[in-house]
Length: 374
Image (tube, rainbow, N blue to C red; front, top):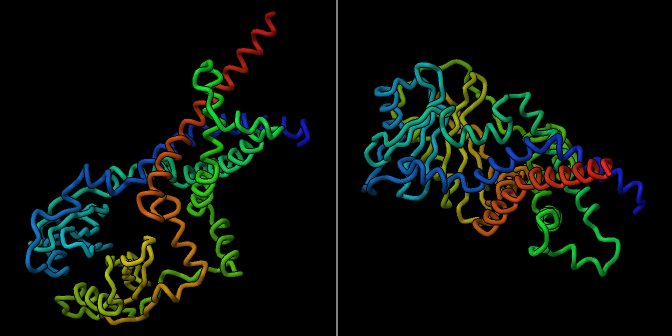
């Protein structure tokens, strides 16, 4: 490569790295936590995951909701999450009297509330907001998105800067000289482990762009389907006015219908829209498939409970299939613990890159200052 071009790439690598370093550090740190979200959260809040004892029969979902309406003044339910595992609790999210989202963990066998937390106060809600938007809303989302784009460039430019001029120097570039000076060890650590983690970090960074930029998501669909238009996850509700029907087992019937439509082993999540336009979406995750987040969908009239539409996972376009793979790939859960462990360590390493890069820059700056004095 042309020496002048490589020098310019090095200059951009340095200053873009310094300008985005703090954001990269925060995003990498929170990302490493998100890899083991369920494991960490179950340790912090065990009452949200397991029941005290497994009973012989479960209370209906409508009974559990009535408990929340009566004892906790919950006005509107937004999500009901259930698991195929008999030892798991059910988790229901709803709006309280202050119109704040509140999460409840309930024992499905007794209908007892085991734990509750406001969504905004949940530890991983804060971690996720930091990860995606730095707790700054839309402005933070733009900052993290741009920083993610910069990080992709830093990875690619870092590979160019790392690449040895001669093949015989390759071995030196692939090892860290631990018995050398701190300055040399720091440089080796930054560049050598940067090379080893390059592909994994590039995949994580590119998949992260899906949540930052609409154009990137549309590009994903274009590559997969040949069109930028994605299929809407929402279905308009056919009944426009609530007929005020007396349905005591409304949500339980929806659950039972979904379970019978897709008779495989799976977790079921009921999503109730906050608006007056869309219908209820129910997802059933296929647990017999090794890759997570492979869910089929059923849509129900939110007033009558009638089935509106069935969307098996096999009917999704390639674009929708790829989109559903983005989250497990991004978090490392795509192939279970082996890929989660890889994702955890490479994201931990990523948070060291701004630090080691800063140390390299400070060392060069000090060297230039000393040379001027001489």
